[in-house]
Image (cartoon, rainbow, N blue to C red; front, side):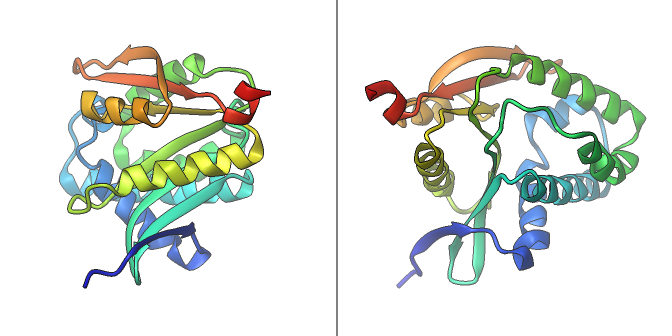
Amino acid sequence: MPTRLETRDLAWRDTWRAARLLADAYADGAIWAAAGRMTRWQRQVSLTLLYLAELLICRWEKGFAIGAARGDRLEGVLISYTAGERPTPWWGWVLRAPACLFAGPVAVARCVRISGDLERLKPREPHVWHAVLGRRGDTPGVGYVLLRAGQARADSLGLPGYLETSAGDEQVEINVLLGWSVVDEYVLRTGKVVRTMWRDCPALVTS
């Protein structure tokens, strides 16, 4: 009988394998495809270092990282920032520097431009930004479970939620069923679309 999927705050000891999981999940992602050509190993190293930095930034910014696991097997990770309206602190870019070195100047320039464009689309009112959600490729349904856990945490803080997704129409429809609304669209140089989405905090809506 399969072990039940459970969500929990990601422990420090899980940081490295969480970064590796996210790197695998986003290796063929739309944003990295728009960054340009890289060898497989170059992309894997860059992404692992990037998400390692992201997990550290999240902890030091007092955000939260939730892992979904079956027993000892980590199946997915959600990284969220409780002050999502704030830009990345300057030292966050220092932590991301090793990833940039491996990615190369062209990829870095394109990713910085994309990041800046998406930053300008973010709402300025207080919210939880669900910044990164990744899962193993053979574990459908984990993203849904993680997003619900992230929503519950945001609700407990009395804050609305914000996210960006390039996963396509099916994922957007699932998010809509969970109470999210599409706010804006950002078209990448490859033609792929990143949608920004917002979810009101139920306590604020009913008050």
